[in-house]
Length: 115
Image (tube, rainbow, N blue to C red; front, top):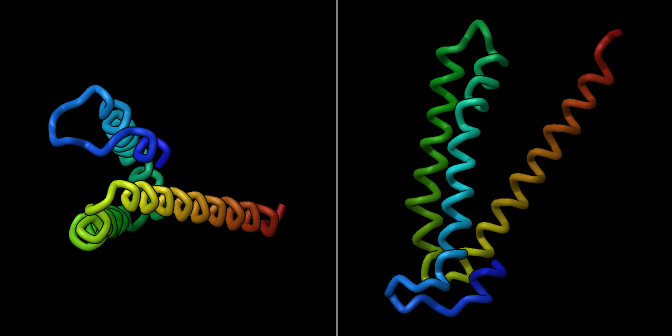
């Protein structure tokens, strides 16, 4: 969000001031693609006897979320770069909250497990 507000609006030409704005999302998407395979393996390890169903459901969920992002959310937020940055920040906050919820639930399950 800071990069979008700090740099001028794009003129339609490739400008050196756009490099930080373009490099950030590029690096984030590259990192997300690197983490997809280990996450898929973690999902499969959770359901060792239903690996096919787990792989299918994981892929289906990913496709549905990508379709919603590109078909519904992206057209709503793309007219203004500040709105895109705010939407990305909201996505990061939601992801962090879900991760914290997962960690808290995992700690609770480990504490309730018999010794």
